[in-house]
Image 1 (cartoon, one colour):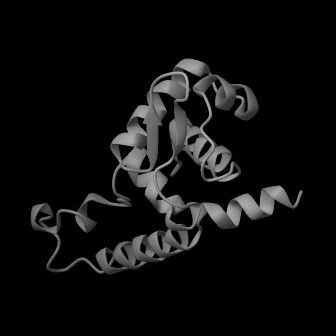
Image 2: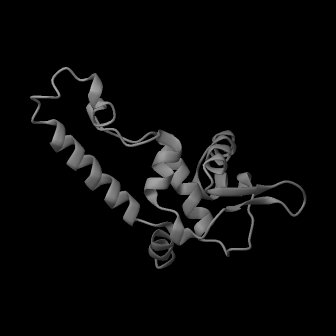
Length: 138
C-alpha cells in the first residue's frame, strides 16, 4: 500500500492549525496538540523537523511560541510531505536509474516518472492558505 505516515498527517495538521492563526500570533505545542488531537510529544518532535525544513519559526520565552516561517500561501502540501517523508519516490528507478539493470529496456520507468510528476504537481498546487479558507468556511 502506498501511504503517507501518521507523522506526515500530523505535520499537515500542525501547519493547518498555524495557517488559521493571524500571521503575528504564536501558539504553544500544547495548544496544537489539544486542538488537532496529536500527542504532545509528537507535536514537539514534528515542530522541530518542520522548523529545520524552514516551514515553522519557534521562539522561546514568555512571548514565544510557534508560527509559520513564511505565509501559508507559500507552503504547499508537497513541502510538508517532503519535510517529513523526504522526496517522493514511487520506485527507486525514478531516483537512481543508473542502478537498474533493466533501464535500457524497461517501459514502466517513464510511467513511474510521469505518475510521480503528476503527484508532485498536485501536492505543490495545494497550499495551506487554501486549506485554511476551506476549514474556516466550515
